[in-house]
Length: 151
Image (cartoon, rainbow, N blue to C red; front, side, top):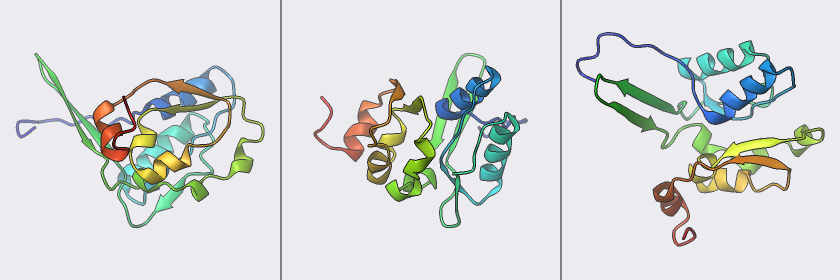
C-alpha cells in the first residue's frame, strides 16, 4: 500500500449488507454491534442508518477502536488486511444484547465470523432465536478462539 495514491472508503460486512438489503425490499431491519467512538464508527453508523436500518442498540465503546478491513485492489490481485483484534465488536458481551429487542424478530442473521472474534462474541450469539446463518466458516479463526472444537 505504500504506492497508494487514492483511498476510497466504503462500509462492508455481511450483517450490515443484509440489513440494508432487507430495508431496500421494504421490510424492517435492525443492526446490533459495538463500535469504537471514533470516525470509522461514526461513518459506519451513519451509512447504515441512512438506509433506514434501526441502529438503536449499537453500543459506543470508548476504550476500543472500530475494527477495519482494508482491501488493496491491484491490476493482477486483490489483498485484504483485517484489523479486528481488540476491536470494539470483539468485546461484545451477552448483556450488550437486549433479548426483548427480538420479540417480534422473524429472522436473525449472523455470519460465522462474529462468534469467532472472541469468546464473549461466541457467548453473545448463543440465543435460541430463529436465524438465517450465512456459512462463512474460518477454520483457523475458530481454532484460535475455540481450540479443539472444530473438526
